[in-house]
Image (cartoon, rainbow, N blue to C red; front, side):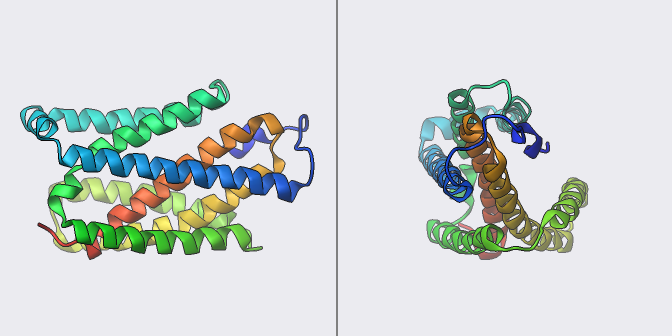
Length: 236
């Protein structure tokens, strides 16, 4: 979805300086994204330490698949319905997605040691931080990155699905390397795109931009973390 088109309207443009309004929107983007990550981390941690939930998933393994379907549905619902949703509703759906994603990710606390998870999180935060700063301050147009990275991501998804059947360890490592570089690039590209939207958007769209922006950067962070965990995570 090209979310630039949702807010590129001539009426109701921001009052005050563009830089001031852009900074205000970007702060809201990072605040929502950070809160979303905290919600996900808490949901995953509590899920991994809930015997009732572990027993439930052991007895109903298909539930995990339903969670992934629900995640896809929520992302599609938020992005495609952003014009129809109120800002509070879009925000609520974002945090609901963060909870569902956290529950779906609780197995990582069972598969990897806590120390390696925390270590990977801080590595991810450092890499993500560097790339989002680059995307925010660079004067270089990163739109070509977006086209390339989107096609690369589609290819990565297809290869990952194929490797489910091939079970190639070599392919798994190549997929992990590619995933890291793709989401490093997407972090910079998404940041620049959100910044541009924040500068062009009407005042009444600021809350929705913050939610869409937070969702995009949240997904970049989570996926980057999961791919880096394959390199830095120590299994239990």
